[in-house]
Length: 611
Ligand code: G6P
Image (cartoon, rainbow, N blue to C red):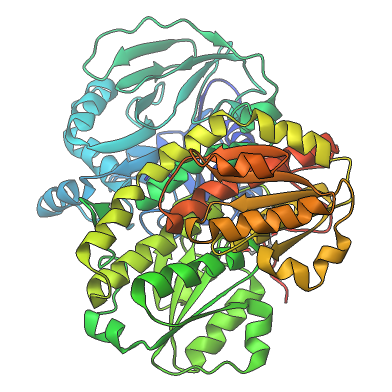
């Protein structure tokens, strides 16, 4: 798992505080659960940091500004340790001599921490980052550069670090391994940043650090080395992008960026939970096998896109764990007087962890004595704090209102949960579980291959952009996927669409099928394939223009449809992770073809905290 978070550093002749805060504002899309800065002045590194968005930090600095011309700053997206004042960066050693900000994870931090504790060091936070500050203090030999070189030899994992100390206040050090970091070169001032947008206002000349490299910055110089001390000659990069494009890694919109982040989000959500064909969630879920055995039903409760993930969750849990599952829209659940007992497991799914309807359902379920498991993307969110058990999705911050990477990560979390419960409860033969656990890690590459080749989806999107009505149809697990595809399209293209279980069309909706109406038909489920083809023929006979989405290697579908696209083959149970990708792209390209504000569609909000 590679967390997000943003880093900025400044050394020059101007007041550092405002440059750091402005830089962090440009990086808020990288994380926004806490923020902090440290600024050097008169022999001291003064720190202001707080839980909450950057505006909370700004309030602190407005009241009591930090003066000084050198400093570092951070905006956090929590992984190790909840969002809190103590866990916010910068972190310092006990003597308050070193101040650091960090992106990434120090995997062996507990070993280093124990060793330092034995030497008498005490720690103020739960983070892996804090150990680096103490380690630097322990290893300090009078030279920041060689001390950092010694320290990184001890550190395993991923890091981008900006480091300041009070003994050598004319210097800042940046060092990177497997987490992005750049150095901006100005006139009489130099910068460190995790991403280019943080510093674009001040300079367009940057050095991009590679893994195992460090930079030493003074006001007037930047020197690059490898972490074993060999000088590095690097050409400077002159950035020609505008700041807005840079924030989106060069993508035109956050939604497109987030769609492309899905292979990584899937990998990160699987990482550390799936090893050698076995899913182990025992470190995250405290329920014992005996307690798990006592559950006789599951309720899944969520809103919007997360609700669609829940519908797939029903099939996954019922087929793997053989426990009955009901899925509810959170705003309905509360008022339908659900039957809740201590043997009900209630799963709430929420990207933000703050959706009011979902939270109300969570509280209601807890009060009725049920056990609640939350699936959420935000560490320290209300769902993460209030649920009895938490299963994180590691998708990173999602900025676009229309959810994409959080959704596919929710599906992955559900598969993991289903597989874990099935193993602990012994509800499926080992071989069958192995088949699924072997197919799961392949999804990431398969999603990538769909993303690499989507020219025909784009062309189809341009066609449907002219329409005001269309239909999505599917059967079995394709049905919840078309519900999600239709929601995505409605949210960001403002085109009316309906998603139907294909077999249900003939009970009324078929009356709406007329010449030329687009129908998007998913046919990825082997067990109902022939039935699905018959439903496609029904709509075609009434003049529909059909885009068929099927599996690679099934040639019969393209004979029955007008346009045909395929996704790679995987187990039927796992296809929803792949089949939703073309539908996300379809919504995206239809929205751009209609000139709509993709990331912020009208009337909608990313996090709905009112009922
Ligand atoms: C809002 C968003 C949707 C999201 C839903 C649930 O309506 O616009 O994209 O699916 O809330 O959000 P949650 O954070 O609970 O997953």
